[in-house]
Length: 151
Image 1 (cartoon, rainbow, N blue to C red):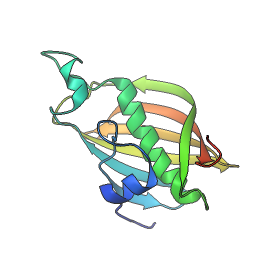
Image 2: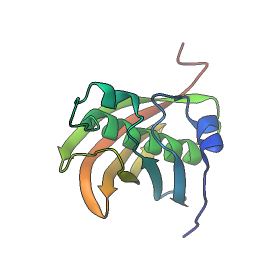
Image 3: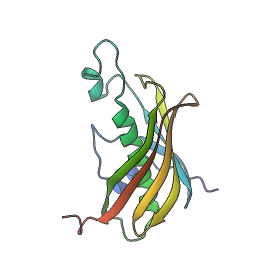
Image 4: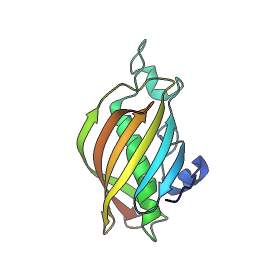
């Protein structure tokens, strides 16, 4: 098992997302060809808490899925040669389940396991945890496309 820390600056070199939709703060573990673990610190300052929901802020479940997808994008980009200038497009979300709300002060531990990667199509088994409890899980499928080809 190889452990690498990927900081926010490197993440921003790998995926195109920026504030307010950059949802991975750092990578704390990367196992080549297998899995990746990332962290998202959820604070009351997140833009989505302004309207979701006033008086009872909850992180929208679709944004937890997006955080998992972004982490999966970091993993996939590490696995494919020549995709440094690429983008990752969602193809499908399967078996998505939301187990518990994510609220300000939570730290999301995001985990993505590579199920397969063939011809730039990637399938991942993903889970998001807060305090070792699963809050969300889904199977995500995406395609890595060279930026020059995506126009």
